Amino acid sequence: MADSEKNNNNNNTIMSTTKPTTAAAAKSASAFNRSFTMQATAPNVDSRPKINYASLNRAMTINNKFYNRMDPVVSAGLSIKEDRIVVYLTSLRGIRRTFEDCYAVRMIFRGFRVWVDERDISMDSAYKKELHCVFGGKNVSLPQVFIRGKHVGGADVVKGMFETGELARVLDGFPRREPGFVCRSCGDVRFVPCGNCSGSRKLFDEEDGVLKRCLECNENGLSRCSDCCS
Ligand SMILES: [Zn+2]
Ligand SMILES: [Zn+2]
Image (spheres, rainbow, N blue to C red):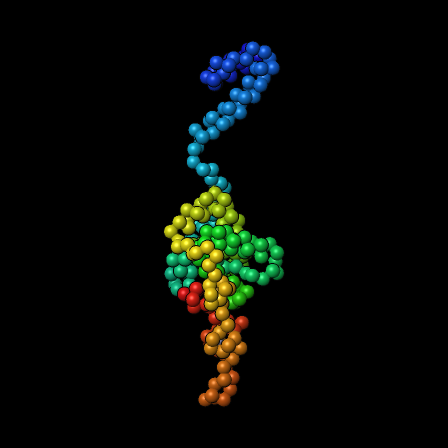
């Protein structure tokens, strides 16, 4: 017990003024000393906000892994523009985990009130082809997030970055929308029925006297909202 007291005194100057006189007091003082030591030294070790290095490293690894490969693809004219946040996702509930991950990532970005170029592959198969092309034909899970033309990763990476505050830092320069803002033209669906064929995907060609496929919309008779998706 004498040794224990001695250690306490050496480790903590407060202890010298409140020297325990009984075994019970020594025990509680020792416990106090332990908790005091933890609280007192933790900020000295690292006073910055705690960073989840594991998730950041994972983000970096994934980023580096794909970055070199996709960079030429992006510069070759794929529409992952460098001025924006692009998220490939699906609104279909086919696979629960995928649906939940897409929803979670959407909500995280919505919380920051930044505009996201949401590319719902269930609305337009061209997005699926784009994604396929970016990853060199490899099947990837959804969602997949790109910020300023660089691949960030899927839901786990984005959630990790959100929790550590890294995402807030990355999104710092992006303009914020008014709280509750919703695009009047598309209701934030990002698509509107094609104005050229009214969503029927067919146009009557008077010269040839036959119905032809409308070239201004996708397989669902939709075109990208011109108000919010320029
Ligand atoms: Zn059309
Ligand atoms: Zn819109």
